[in-house]
Image 1 (tube, helix red, strand yellow):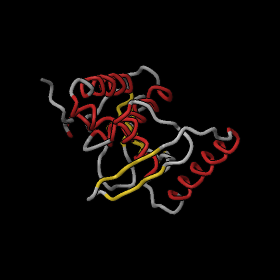
Image 2 (cartoon, helix red, strand yellow):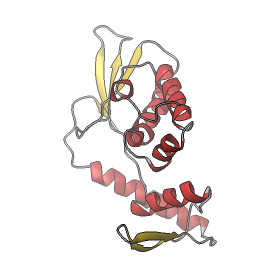
Image 3 (cartoon, one colour):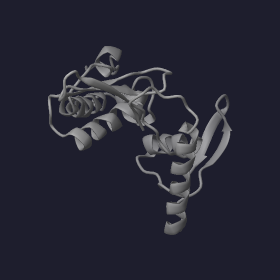
Amino acid sequence: MPNESISIDELTKKRTPTQLKDWVMQEMERLKLTEEGYKKLSLHEGLAKPLMEEVYHLAEFGIRKYGDTDQILIQPIIGPQNYDAVITDQRIEPPIQSYVEVTQSHEGEDEYLRSLVLYGKGIVPLRGPVIKKGTKKKGIQIDVPYVATDVIQNVRDELMRIVEAAKRKEGKDYPCGMHQ
C-alpha cells in the first residue's frame, strides 16, 4: 500500500519547471491510490494543502513562464515567510534568485464546505448558497442547493475576490526580486 504522506524534503526540493510539474502530477496520482491520501488531497489536509494551494500553481507558473529548461530551478518554501518559492535563474552569470508568492482568491469557509460535500457526494455546485447547520462537536450538516445563478454576478464576485486577495498583499514587506 502506498504511503499517504507527503515528504517535506520532497515538497521543498529544487527542481526545473518540468521536473516540478511532473513530480506534482505524480504525487497527486500517488495520493489518490488510497482513501486517506485521496481525502488529504481533496480536502487540502496536511502537506497536501501546500501541494495543492502553492506547489501545483508554482509548477504551472514555471512551465508557462520558463518552459522546458534546465537553467531555471524552483524551490518551494513552506512556512510563514512572505514568499512561497525561490527561483534560481542560471541562464546568466552569476545566477540570480527571485522570490514568488502564490496568492489565491477564494470563498473562505464556503469553499472548504463545498470541498467536504464534493468529497462525500462526488458532486457539488460551484456557485450558489452554502448552508451550514450544527457544530463540529455535534456534527455539521452542509447543504449546497442546485440553483441557477447569474453569470455576470458570478464574474463580478470572482473579480471582487481577486481584488481583495491583492489588497491583502498590498502592505507586505517583500524581499527584492519578489514576484506576485
